[in-house]
Image 1: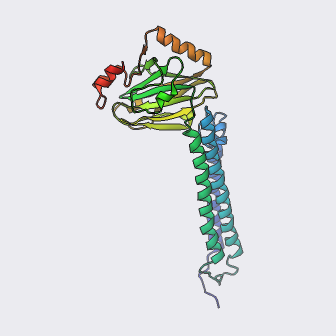
Image 2: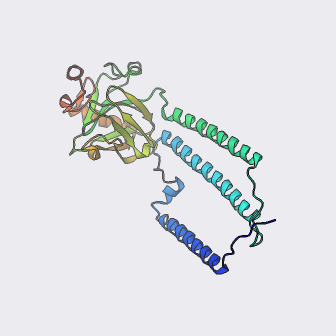
Image 3: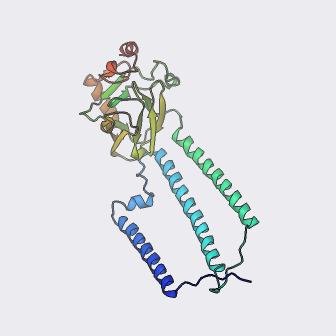
Length: 308
């Protein structure tokens, strides 16, 4: 016994199929045209992720690409099963409907177990990459970074660091005896120099509100929180100049919290730090807020004056 359904005119079915095919063709054409530029060819390979310039960024990129590949494979399997069901169980005659199935126990078990297994695998890879990004093994250099309204201050250590002094970032015991500093302003975008092939740790300070320190090429960013010193480290692998900015909406002049990152050879980096010292841009302790820090909410004036 079968159900009787109203018949659809063949011409109408053809018109619907033609419109669907035209829409799909136009959508595919737009996607292909969007990727024709030689500049964006690398973005296709990285699946829209910026080119990593650090060793840690490579791990992030691998996780991103792996997640996309897994998602596409899963999608292809699901789409394939849907297409198979549509074809295998399609209506054979105009006047009947295929047998309707309420549930399929093996399939429901599969759709329960498979997502759990995928989540476990994703979790394991995420933890692995997180360990790489947040690795706190002894670095070659330590830079005290300050995000303040509305620019950045970079404090480069002079000489060799005492990393034992860096174990507690909440005190005023710093790993260097002298710091060469670069203070940015709203009209002067500061430049952060990093040595190629050496690991540099960033200790992040804020005297006022929450900021976020990030460089797209790092594939990493981290919040800069008042009263807390967050940190992460990078190992640059590519020389060049790159853009950085504040990724946290921190107030009226947030969009002007820009800085440049320049990766140079270790010899150039040492010469640069020495030139800052010779120019008088140095102090016995890092500047925790730049020239205008004493007027900013949240900074202990006494501690700053003692540190300088």
